[in-house]
Image 1 (cartoon, helix red, strand yellow):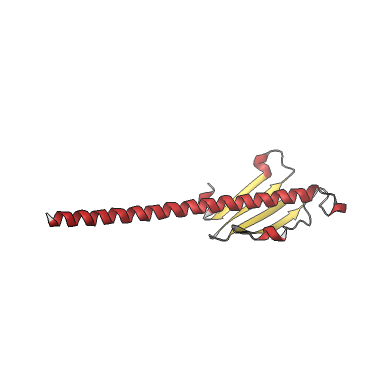
Image 2 (image 1 turned 30 degrees about the vertical axis):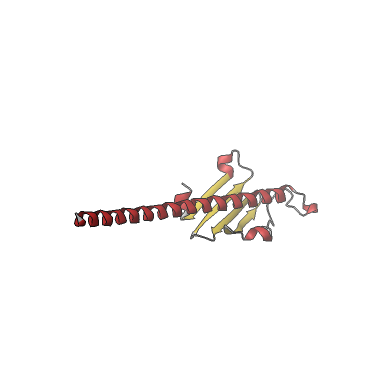
Length: 135
């Protein structure tokens, strides 16, 4: 009977170990997804700021209908989620990139205000771990 109890204890320890490993992987997957969502949210906030710049007249420090000269405000360049930059800002198209500070991953947004529908107005490209979290 002692041998059977020892076998059950070993089996219980193995099952608990497997459950902990699976739980950790699920937590990490959730963390990657949450960070991906946070980076997307930050980029959309920056895109909204860029849009405000575009519609503001040049006499008031804006773009006068175009994104040329747009720069991300210093307080939005680095957040707890990522580091952001303007890749290009030409005419009615601005390209923004956000690189995660937690993972080796990034999102790129091409925002074209002249597009006819939302599907072509916002073009998102994930890289690294976000390729799987964003799908």
